[in-house]
Image (cartoon, rainbow, N blue to C red; front, side, top):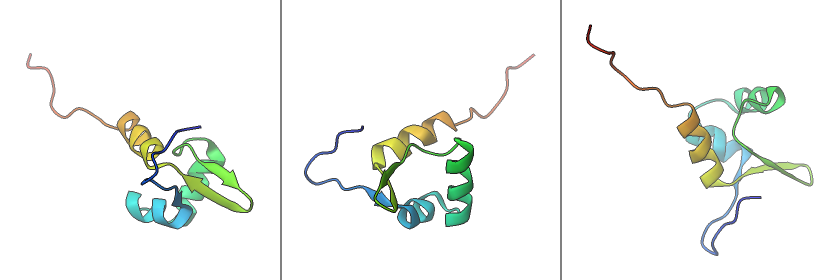
Amino acid sequence: MARTTGSERLWSHEETATFLDVSPWTLHKWNSAGTGPKSYKLGKHRKYAPQDVYAWLETRASVSGGVAA
């Protein structure tokens, strides 16, 4: 599990969806498919460590531009 410092807190499912600018349902579908950011099930709530969300975003990055021929 990702470690957090005392000032960091886990994000709710809704907060994470808002941060990613997607609907909570889209985030739920990503979780079900295993393609979304790492999350933790705490009771009936799903939580996300901000650093895990940022790390997941890095895996989604693409490089613009091409190689000149």
